[in-house]
Image (cartoon, rainbow, N blue to C red; front, side):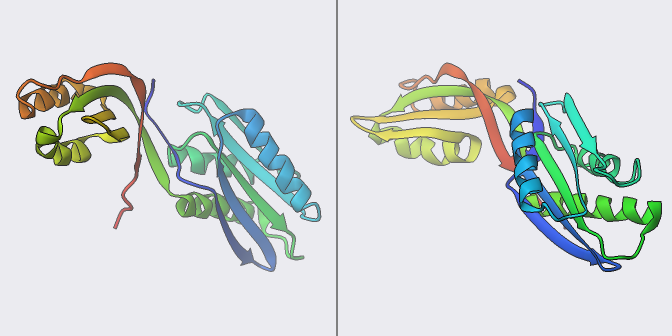
Length: 212
C-alpha cells in the first residue's frame, strides 16, 4: 500500500473572464470508468457549453493520467489543468472546466491562465486529504482499565470499531511505523491484560491543515 493525497469531496467554482463563463469542478474517483461517467454526465448537463475540458489522475501514484483540450487550442486547457493536479500532488481525481464563450478571444496565454485558475480553485474548494497506510489492530479491555487507555487510543489511532459488551472491544488503525509502540503502550496501560493483535491493514484518512 502506498500513501497518497486526494481531494476531500466534490467541488464547484465559477468565474467570468472577458464575458466568458468558466465553471471548474473536481470529483473524487477511484477508477477511470468512474471518471468517464462523471464526464459524460457533465457533457450532458452542459450540452450547450462551448468546451468541457478535463484532466484526471487515477492510482496511488497517478499511474493513469488523461487530459483533453476539447476543441480549445492545443496545450491551452487540458495540460494546464493536469499541471495543477500534479503540482498539488493529488490523485484519484477528475477535474473539469466548462467554458461558455463570451465573444472575446482570450489568446493562448489567457486560456492557459483561465483553465489553470479553474482547476486550482476547484482543488482548493475540494480540500485535500492524506491517505496513509496503516495496520489494523484488535484488542479487548475490561471496563476497569478502559479509562486508562481511552484518551491514548483516541489521540493515536483511528477507531474503526468500538463495541461495549461484556468488555470493551476495539478495532483500530495506526500508522505502520507506530504499530509496535502503540501495542506496547496498550500492554503497559492494561498491566499486560490486553495485547493488540494484527488483523489486517487499511488507510488512515486525515485532512490536510490549510496553510495560513
